Length: 228
Image (cartoon, rainbow, N blue to C red):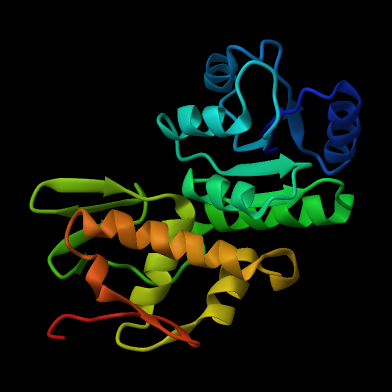
């Protein structure tokens, strides 16, 4: 049974979501002290965090930063705010997906299932990567290491990197990446993929590897192979 931490201060909405998720055999935990979310997160050790943006004391962006500083657990944002920058900000902070309120519960379930599948089913990926331009790729730890320097990737970022390296020197279309990452492209904006790829490239830049992930305008992305 997956443990979910639902960080939602609206008691009525929390109870409704909790009841529905428990029907799908998820164990749903709430927050008692919204000024001490990180400690409760550490105690629960959830498999996935669902977090509202508008919260008492500190907003969801703050707690996303705090959680990301300690863990790569998948994070899904809920928000009644409809400004595009909220989605962009959440992805830049390391969130895995974003659900706009009000939402159809089937959409929420589909997104939760998609995130859990791609995060916890990595062993089903047939490709085994060792090195890339001298960098060691560790998909179990979600790290890339070069000359003693280590960068940590989120599950999404590592998935994208592995997918591109599986097809080195070939274009992987945006549609293919979206379908692979989110299972059903109806529930994902095109901008979400852009944010994830840009975040991956920025991290790889720390190892001077970002230049090897090329954007093919109007098509998709391509990872260069050695010797290029």
